[in-house]
Length: 224
Ligand SMILES: Cc1cc2nc3c(=O)[nH]c(=O)nc-3n(C[C@H](O)[C@H](O)[C@H](O)COP(=O)(O)O)c2cc1C
Image (cartoon, rainbow, N blue to C red):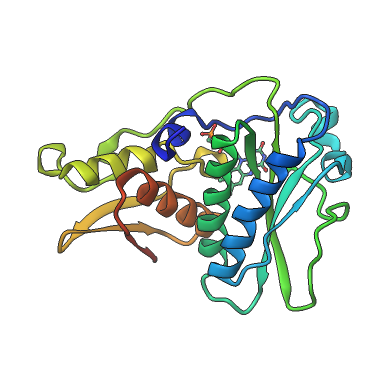
């Protein structure tokens, strides 16, 4: 599965099949996480076979089922771009997981921080977690804002790489599907802007990685 296919096939999955993730798959996931940690300086971690973190009211109301594994997005509090960085590398792991046949769901609120088994050092912060496992379903595509609300470039003026990037960004997960970002082009470079708001830093990093993976071009982000 190519990265573009992974972007298209990925949807939030909240119900999982019980049972462990096999060793070969764990190794691939861990390699990806290690690579991300080396590149980013973050302390991303995967926790397996640990249902406690999702043993909350939200599971009892049927929102989540059989979440036994999760990735914790952890990093140094002093990093100014911690949230964007967490989003960027978290989404890299999400798409790798999709390529491995796994399903995921970013979770910023509906999990138990107290029962999260991640190792968080004194200077670090847990931003959110990502549920991971074999889905009992594959999820459904989210409803997107129209392209005109998310991008300032006319379709006829978009180079192919930029159009692919915008399509990738539109398919990216955002908290509560808020899609609070705007893509423009400056000197042949894509620039994604977001206003400060609830979880918009994480969202911006997620959208940046999705744009880059879909377009094959680096893009710049700015938080206003
Ligand atoms: C930063 C972030 C936090 C999220 N937090 C939650 C959450 O607490 N509970 C939940 O059920 N879904 C959560 N989601 C999933 C979003 O609701 C979902 O990504 C969005 O509705 C788009 O749907 P899709 O992922 O299927 O494309 C979160 C997503 C992101 C990116």
